Length: 431
Image 1 (cartoon, one colour):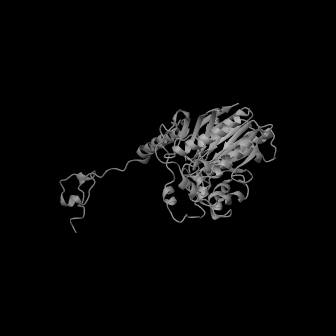
Image 2 (cartoon, one colour):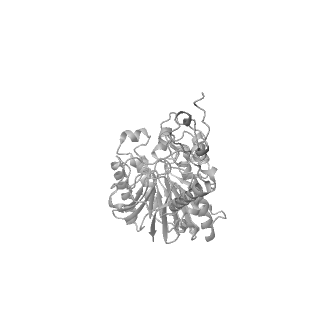
Image 3 (tube, rainbow, N blue to C red):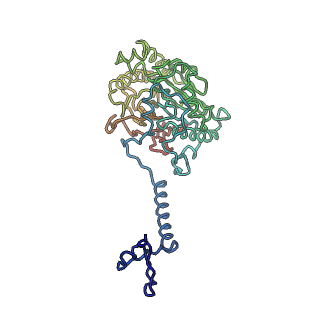
């Protein structure tokens, strides 16, 4: 107890600081470290550290973004796959969870990446597909981007003199199918219509008068496909196939088709499981031949919308189905081209592949056909994509996103936006 007390300092030791150790070993020198001055040592270091951090942040948020085609995918939200494995499907109002909560501030985008604010267009089309997962797998992020683009596009197209005061007829969403995972819906008022569609998109400001021109996907056939025909507006799917005129002066004709009957004809088991009869594909093509036989007055662009691709970089194991659909569509388009309607369609927009892709398909008897794949509305494809799709593929990326298409009388500008609103790629189709 006494040994723990410091001994008194002598007159010659006044400059030395002591500890209790000196009571035991007085010959061991001891010097207490002096506390550094905050203003002379710590503050300058803190200023330097903050300066370096600011430089790093400035570089990160302003550096050019030049992704490489066939790049590896960005990760989905951490709970994506785990949530999809839950049985039964958890139909609940999703948390507003984001994969990239720091983004959605468009002030960081360069002006060239906001081209729909630089000029007025006859119409803007926003393509999205393969999305209905109750907000999971970055679907909430996509909803924010979709809402922001729709509001911006409607303001831009309005200055050209819309047919409607709100501009809703000149802005539309092209919904490429697989609308409600994992098994479609049984009725038009099923809970997932609310939790996967209304709660996700309209709660963040997507205008409710912009139509969703929708087609069926294979997952929608697992439920009652016809239930989606009577979902209230702005959902637009009066049947498995229909047409819609858009744009100032009606210069765009959207032709929506159901590709599942043809896509699965090569697999009798899968076709039977989805309830697709043998005559469904024949009815589909007979209808399309009639539509493509003539071009209505004033139509400058014809855009075909379906679910399945005719060029694929990510449909691993479905090469036979892709080739079968392409062959059937080629036959229909070549028949229309022989009737002096050339080209019968200008673009094919689809999904199914959970990625974003642009390809230019060489259709026998028709010529080049631009193929836009927008199937990255939530969960993205697995596996590598390098080299798939051949030379027809101009761009492919496995990342959640949408495709914005600005249309005027002479060109379509298709811009691929990821789940952060960053433009990844642009394709221009000209008349």
